[in-house]
Amino acid sequence: MKISKIMKTISLLLSIIALSIVVNAQKTTTIEFEKLTHDYGTIHEEKGPVSYDFIFHNTGKEKYIITKVDASCGCTTPAYSEEPVKAGKTGFVRATYDPANLRGKFSKTITVIGNSNSKIVLTIEGNVIPRPRSELDDYPALMGGLRFKVNHVVLGEVFENEIDTGLIEVYNFGKTDITISSMRLPDCLRTEYTPIVLKAGEKRKIEVYFSAYIKEDLGYVFERMQLQTDDPLMPEKELIVVANIIKNIKILSEEELKNTGSIQFDKKEVDFKKIKHGDVKFTEFKFMNTGTDQLVIYDTKTDCGCTATTLGKMRYEPGEEGLIKVTFNSKGKNGSVQQSITVTTNDPNNPEVFLLLRANVESIN
Image (cartoon, rainbow, N blue to C red; front, side, top):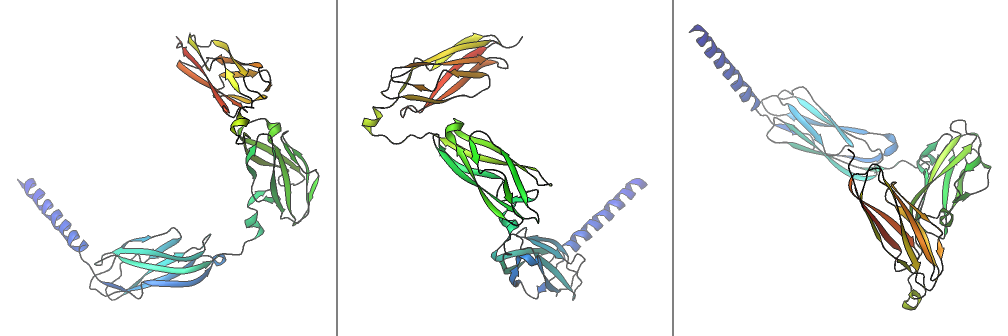
């Protein structure tokens, strides 16, 4: 019986405390900011962040407690009076604006939430003057004692029988000369004769020549250039040359279309049917140049390392036949398999021909 009374007493006390908390939490007050908008005027980026304190007065009868302050942008960092502001006293909300990498006019807001009748929105404004650009901005790619505008050369689209030119823009920002003694290049790239001496403080443009004809490929290609230098900080520097090699097929008239190479396959699909896992299968796709001019096979690409192709030669005269020999390795395959081969030609009616291999590979026991 006594335990029951004690439990009732504890329950009553907890209810009173909870009610007291709710009543106190619901108490509101009024505040007034001296101003709701601040204009920083002109801000110079190189001088860094600027701050302003919005001052408010607690004009009510209860303590004012700020529970949350939100900025509309990551460039603005707020701070505020964390202790309760008593009636008749003042508090602050500080807005710090960072102009780094920004420019021009701006207007940002800070929302203040507390136990007043409503949330308050403060506004900061200004105009950022960007810092003067330097050589370090223009040449951001750092490699030892040299800076480059970019660490790659993008050539864009290049016809498969053409040569295109790109530029390496380099800046020796140090106090000593640096010599590019040699360059390791693939066969499809050429550049200026070495050695190339870059004087201290010198900016230089080095031409790079890319031969799509020598590369003998289509689509996106990535070639590495390795520069050997006497730079003690980084003797070897690597740049990437990127190009998209495309077919050079001009728009032909109906009469011109009659006088071109034309590819005709005896079949475009081979089904090996049911084979054992690990079996290696061979097949051939026979074709003929049925056109009136030379046929050129630019490339035969497979979509998997399990398939390999062999082509006797690239050029076929009118009426001449050719073979694409194919090897398919089923190792690592399971169930229904389909592999494709893309044949790229100068036939304007069939610039790409897709050949197909099928098989049903037995599972490993």
